[in-house]
Amino acid sequence: MAGEDPPELVEDLLAGEHRALARTITRIENRSPGYRDLVAALYPHTGDADVLGITGSPGSGKSTLVDKMAKRYRDRGLTVGVIAVDPSSPFTGGAVLGDRIRMASTATDMDVFFRSMSARGSLGGLSTATADAVKALDAFGKDKIIIETVGAGQNEVDVVKTADTVAVLVPPSSGDDVQMLKAGILEIGDVFVVNKADLAGADKTVTELKNMLDMRDGDPDDWEPRVVETVADSGEGVPEFLDVLDDHAGWLAETGRREAQRHERHAEELRNLLLEDVGDLVEAELDARGGVDELAARIDAGETTPYDVADDVVEPLADCLDEQRD
Amino acid sequence: MSHESQRNIRCLVAKVGLDGHDRGAHVITRAFRDAGFEVIYSGLHKAPEEIVQATVQEDVDVLGISILSGAHNTLVPKIVEGLEEYGAFEDTLVIVGGIIPEEDRPGLKEAGVDAIFGPGTPMEETIEFIRENVVRRD
Image 1 (cartoon, one colour):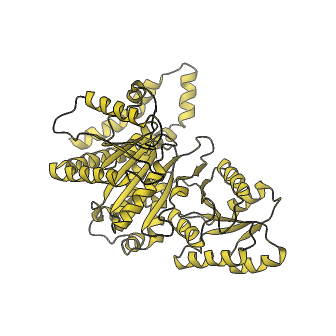
Image 2 (cartoon, each protein chain N blue to C red):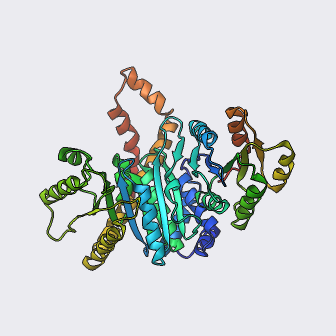
Image 3 (cartoon, rainbow over the protein chains, first blue to last red):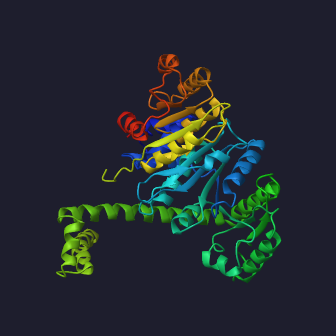
C-alpha cells in the first residue's frame, strides 16, 4: 500500500481514537472486506511494542495474573493492550468471553485496552487474526501487549508463538512429569510460572519443572528457560516475574534474536496468507465443478478417489504457474 | 474480495451499580451464547465508566444492561453519555432488562435505550429483537 493514503479508520487509530482501534480489531476479526488494506496500512507503524504470550490450563490464574501485570506496567507509566482468546462452541459459534471480569485493578483506565476474542474455529486463521490485532495495538502505541490464551491444542500454541516472550502457567501439583511432556509445553515456554504458589505441592512442581528443563538438550546459546513462583491473587512474585520478562526482552535485543524472530514471523505470515489465498482459489474452482458435495458423492459411489480429484483440480493451476515462470 | 466475512453478533451483558443479583444476567448470557452470540459478561457491581470502557473496547453490537436495584434513571443515562463521548452510541443497540416500572420507561427510551425487557419476557423474544435490530457493521 506504500504511496497510497491510509484508510480513514487507520488515520483515526493513529490519532489515538479508542473507537477506531476497537473497530479496526473487529474488521480484522471478521475479515471484513478491506481488512487487508487496513493491516497493510498499520504495518509501517508497528514493531515498537513488547509482545508477551501467557498460556496455561483453564483455572491456572492467567486472567488474574494478566490483571496484576497490567497494573504494574501502568504504575511504571507504560500503556498496555490485552488480547484474551477464549474458546467458542463449534456447534453454534457462540461463546462466553469471561476474562474481562478479572481486570479489576485497571478498571476505567482507558490506557489499558482489553479485548476479548473468541477462537471461532476458523481454518487456523486464529493466529493470523491475533497477530493482526496485535499490530493494531502496536500501531496505536501500546508499550506492552499481552496475548492470553488457554494452553490446549495446536491453535493456541500457534497464537502464543506470535509473541516475543512466552510465559506458561503451571498450577501446583498438576501431575507427574509425564503429563508435562505429553502436553509439549516445555518447548514453547521462555518462563514457567508456578502460580498459586501458596498452595500445597508448589515446591514439588517447581522442582519437577526445573528437572524437566535441565534434561532438555538445548543449544548453549539459547535462552535458559526460567521458573518463577507467583500468587497472582495477592500480587506476590509478580514484580520478579516481570523482571524475568524484561531479562528475556533484553536478551532478545542483545543476541539479535528479536530480529530473527521477526523474520521468521514475517515468513510465517506470508505463508499463511498465501495458503489462505490459494485455498480460496481452489474453493472457487470446486464450486465451478459443481461443489465439493457432488465430488464427494462420486467418491462415495466408488467412481473416483480424493487423490484423483485433487490432482485433477490442481493440475491446471500448476500448469498455469509453470507457463508464467518460463 | 473473495474472503468469507465471519460475522458474529457480540454482546456485553452488564451489571451496573449496587445490585448483587445476577442470576438473570447469567441466564441471559447462556441463552445468548446458545443463540450463537459472543457474550462478554461484565461481572457484578460495575461503575457506568467501566461499562462504557468495555462497550468501546470490545466493540459490541449490543449492550444489555441488567438492573434490579431501581437506580436505572441515574445509571443508564450516565452510560449513554459515556458512549456518546467515545462515538460508540449510534451503532450500539442498548437494551435494558430487570425491574423497570412502567412510568420510567418513556424516560429511558428518551435517553437512548432501544428496548426494555421486563421479567417474564420469553428469551426468544429478546434474541429475535437483537437479530432484527442490530446495526450491521461491514
